[in-house]
Amino acid sequence: MLENISAAPPDPILGLTEAFQQDSRSGKINLTTGVYKDEQGNTPILECVKRAEEKLLKDEKSKGYLGIDGLAEFLNSVRELALPGLAAEDQVAVFQSPGGTGALRVAADFVAKNFAGSRVWLSTPTWPNHPAIFQAAGLETKQYPYLSADRKSLDAAACLETLEKEGRAGDVICLHACCHNPSGVDPNSEQWQQIAELTARIGMLPLIDFAYHGFGDGLQQDRAGIERMAKHHQEYLICSSYSKNFGLYSERIGALMAVCPDAVSTVKVRSNIKTCVRSNYSNPPRHGGAIVACVLGDTELRSLWTSELAAMRDRIHQMRSAFVEAMRHRSPDVDFSFLMDQRGMFSFSGLTPMQVDWLKSEKGIYIVGSGRINVAGITPSNLDYLCDSIAEALSS
Ligand code: LMR
Image (cartoon, rainbow, N blue to C red; front, side, top):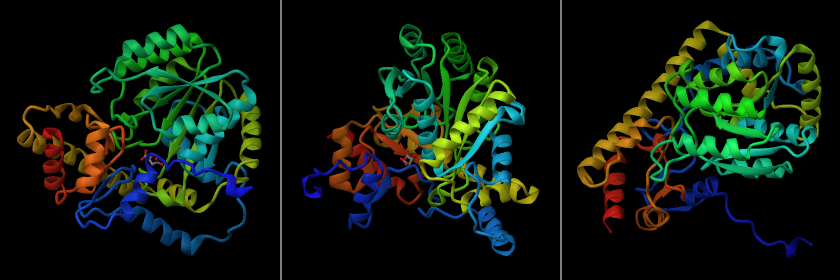
C-alpha cells in the first residue's frame, strides 16, 4: 500500500526553511518563515517568558489534562487582550488552541459541520496555508481580489465589487486583522468600514486571522479593524496566535474566539466547538497557555512584555527603512519606498519568481516564491550582502 504513494510537494514556506538548513554556504540568509530575529539573527526567548517560566516551575502543581477549552486564566486574558470592551464575557466562546493554525482548523471544522454550503472567501494573495486548512475541513474556498495590479497597495474597489456580486449570506469572509500575510498591506479605517458594512449587509460571517497582534503599529492600533467589524457584526470568529508576539513559536499556542449575539447562543456554540476539538486534538497543551496567562496576569510581566514587543516592532521598522534606503542607492530606478506603507513582518518585494530562484541558487538568499520577504530576518550585518544581491538580480 504505502509504496504506491507519490511524494507530496514541499510546503511553500516551511519547505524553504528545510532547504535553507541544508544549505552549507556561510553567508546564506533566510527570509522565508515568519519568525522574528534579533540583530544577531537569533530568535530570542523573551525575558517576560523566561520569568513566567521560572514562576511556573515553582508554582505549577499538575500536568493533568486541561478542559477541552483550555486554561481558564488564559481564556480570560486573551479575550480581554483581543476584544477589550467589544463583547461581554458571556458572548464569547474562547478556546486555547495549538497555535493560530490550530484555531483556524477548529474554526474551519466548526463552520463545515454547522453551516452546509458555506464558502470561505480568501484574499488573493493570502497565507498559502489558508486554502489548505479550509479545504481539509471540506469547505469550498473562493478568492476575492486584494492588491492593486502593481501589488503595492490595496484595491478596495475590486475587493468590494467581487464580494458584492458573488458573496452569499452564510459565506465566511476571512480577513487579516493587521499585518496582512504575505503583503503587509492593510485596509485603512475607511476601507475597514466599507468591508464591515458590505459583509454585514450580505450576511457573511467574518473570520479574522489575528496572527500578528502588536507587530503593526501597537496593541491597540492593531485592533482597529476588529473594532470596525464589531460595530457592524454581532457575530464573528477570531483566530489569534501568540507565536509571534510572545515568541512562543514552538510552544504552539493560539486561541479561537467565537463572538456570539447573546449568552444563550454562546453556550450552544461552545458545546459545538468542543466536539470539533475533541475529535481533533482532544484538549490543548498546557505550557504555552500557562506562560501567556502568567505574563498577562502579572502587572510587571505584562509591562515588560509590551516593551519587548515594541522593541521587536521597532527593529522590524528600522530594517524596513534601512532596506529601502540601501536599495535607493543601489537600484535608483526601482522605487522600494512603498515598503514603508506596509506593516508587520512581511513585505511583497516585487521580485519575480525567476529573481527569487536566482537569489536562492546563486546567493543563498531564501525568499518565498511570491516575492514575500520576512523583514524581521534582515539584520545590520546581512543588509549589505542582501541589497547588493537584490540589485544584481534586478539588473540582470
Ligand atoms: C509564515 O507565514 O511564515 C508563518 O505564519 C509561519 C507558517 O507557519 O507559515
